[in-house]
Length: 476
Ligand code: FAD
Image (tube, rainbow, N blue to C red; front, top):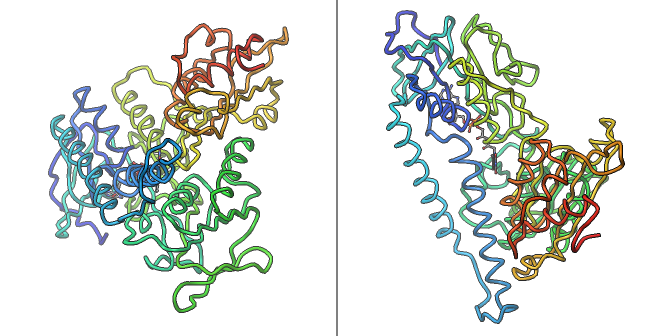
């Protein structure tokens, strides 16, 4: 953004001006508008942000394509005769676009129906809660807010020597727009997004090598859960290398040779770089706003999402909290509650839900067993595999388990739930009750009062908790 003319017209005054229309920004806007506040959202591309256009939604839509492929490929086991499936990626991408477009139109319509002003352009915070907006034609105007929320999100991080070119080197942005499935790929980074892409590309026919610098995949997950994913990936032909550093790559005519670890290399058609995301604060702040960035470019906030400038808040991927759309929602709501002077509680980051949509799926909330012990808790741990679950047998997806970590009470019995970790079929849809249990600080005795419908996958959580009362039905 060039310099902002001092005399640019003041084109509107609002209760809240939001810079960035992704989950953090639009959640604040929808929640605030529902409470009667006047709100402008400045968005340089499309409302919905990374999540809707280059993240959660398109990624999960393509993972669903992979799941349909697996189902059809395994149909014979059910006596359903179907030819060996193949993927027409153009059709898959078309469907993905339709899903995204429908949700985008719905979100825009909802925002307009709540009288939220969507301003097309790039926002920059000046001082005194004035925001300059440069529209796509280069015209500059200014908006004034009683409060300003910074929500400009994040962009993929890259590594030196792996500059994305859309062919040999891809970030998530390019993977979600592929014209064809590369016959072979290296995925650099075994975090949530790296594992989702490795899983999806392997299902759709790529020969996948997954490289992770840390000792295990899915850092932050309970190691028992990550182990199930590693075993499953290896069974499906994904080459998993952990504890290895990537040294660079050399194009070799048709693809590229990636060097990693101790003198190893692999020839592939493309490299997917999935090493996290950096906060997008480029050009966001004018001179002397009082908003501070930390060493990594995240906007510094306190637990109430307040920046160093009065009445200026920051939410979502722009701040150093878990980079999840629903965390952005929660932070946006937290800010608006304060603006409305309503009772509010800071987000409890140690107990937010995490869902990873690779195959098998992963979902967890709260402390890992290791983390709970390191925090000084005496714990009781129970694990129950999906192999004993009737519905899992019916759908033919028996790998995985539920692991529940409880605090040990003085009488030796299992007390409040500290963490629940799931891996297996549709666990992302089963986490809800575990999330509530952990956040309600419920005990197995309390949760076991409630009935799980039969036959469901969620019975495994119920069984694990029942076993923690000392009287399991099917689990000892
Ligand atoms: P963003 O969504 O990045 O939105 C920021 C918006 O601000 C953008 O629209 C941008 O155009 C706009 N903007 C930036 N600067 C300016 C400016 N100066 N002026 C005007 N507009 C500006 N999270 C989950 O919870 N679940 C998932 O399954 C999941 N899957 C993911 C899969 C992938 C491949 C990726 C990349 C991410 C995934 N995420 C997932 C993370 C999720 O997408 C982000 O946490 C979320 O989008 C962050 O929301 P945000 O509002 O902070 O920022």
